[in-house]
Image (cartoon, rainbow, N blue to C red; front, side, top):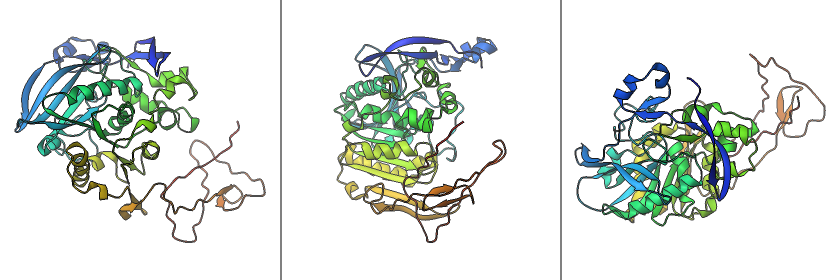
Length: 434
């Protein structure tokens, strides 16, 4: 792919003016415009339908109000598709907020929901988002939003910061006042679509009744771009390269070079204020996934008295779209978006899967009162290079273990003398010198 146009721009971040690097996003274009482009031009363009404000029926019993314009507090207009049951009435609204494109095959056109069989999710669903084909048939409206700068929405896209949160606030308050809405809104989605939920909830929109961030990175510096202090920019660069819009995107990998340390306004602006999240929360976390740290930290730090955690071993997409988990989530939404007295409060505050070797699950959805588990016994282990082991006492002598860094590795083993469960935090401290 050719060089992407970049600019430097000063933007407001948490009340401070911060200079950031922004790059041109993939340009939305019609199929006809794409055909007329050169191969070089096509590298920076993505087929996306022009605005077409209309109301139609994508499936029997469901109507879509397409490309509705919504004005933000600073005058910027964003666009949204609203799906709702065809029958007249006031419905609670479930919102998907992300830069993936408000219709399937926009934005992340070539992405698939790995691990989910074909036809499980309807063609109305955004990537990693609630499916209108399910939720509208259970008495909810669904909003697929193109945030500021995405698709045909105006402005530049600043990723995962307070601007996203403020825009989410403005949209929720607009939606709650519409004649098809019952005035209660919730946020839904996993991964990227979960991450924005914390930023919006921290702004405390009055009509946001609950959130369900299933798998959520919440500290962009420590959990995504610079894990353990080591820059790792390729994955974020890969994801954001597919963002499609008429203007510019906050390029976080390039801004890591500009702002390499975490204690600056740029990175602090991307940290949700968990102390302001007091509404009901249903958080999930996968033991084997990049969102684990962020999900657990968000659950622990938010100030809601009504919060639930389900930690599992499955990959995020099959977990999110499984029938069992959809029904579980529906109980949560019915309680707080429809105000049904359905016994949701009896759901254990923490449910965890305990996995054994291979595919065997030792326990599924085991109920717990808190996380970390109060009965956890913490142990310090010390590395011993003399016999490639870990010991429970500090190692007295100095020793060396070496390997060829290209094909090789060094393994240090610890033998458990009794059945042991590790359902909590693991931490390794290394002192490294070159």
